[in-house]
Image (cartoon, rainbow, N blue to C red; front, side, top):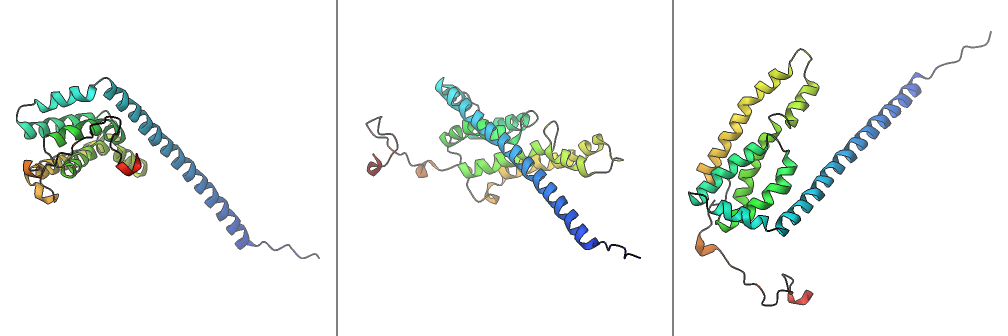
Length: 210
C-alpha cells in the first residue's frame, strides 16, 4: 500500500500567519494613509481659510473685538475658554487648532499673555472634544471594544465626570499658573518690540538672505 502523504502542519500555520500579518498590515497602512490624507486636507483648507479671512481684515476685526472685552486679559481668557469649549461640541481638535487658535494667539500676545502658558491652557480645554459627542473619539474607541451589554448612553454618561475634571483643570491652570512653569502675564518691561524695516519689501528676511 502507498504511504499516506504527510501534512506539514507547521508550514501551513506559518503560511496562514503570513497571510494574516499581510492582511492586517495592509488594512493598517490603508487606514493610516486615509486618516493622514484627511488631516492634510483639513490643514490645507484651514490655511486657505485663514489667508482669505486675513485678506478681508477679519483678523483685525477679531483682535478689536477681543481686546475690548471688559476685564482685560482675565476677561479675554474667560471668553476664549468658554468659546473653545463650546466649539469642541461641533468641531474636532484639528479644526480648532488649525483655524481658531491662529486667530486667538496674536490677540493673547498683544495682551501680554505668555504664548506657552496660553497654548497649554487651550490644549487642556480642547481635550474635552475627545470626551463628548458628536466628535468624542475616546467614546467611540471605548464603544468599539466595550461589550454589547454596555449601552452607548452609559458610555456618554460615564464620560461626564472626566469632562468635569478637564474643566476643573482649566480653572486650576488659570488660578495657579506656576504649575505650567510660565507666568501667564508677561510684564511690560520684558516685552521686546522688534522694529520693522523701513522698506516694506524687505520683509523679515535677514540682510544676508536678501
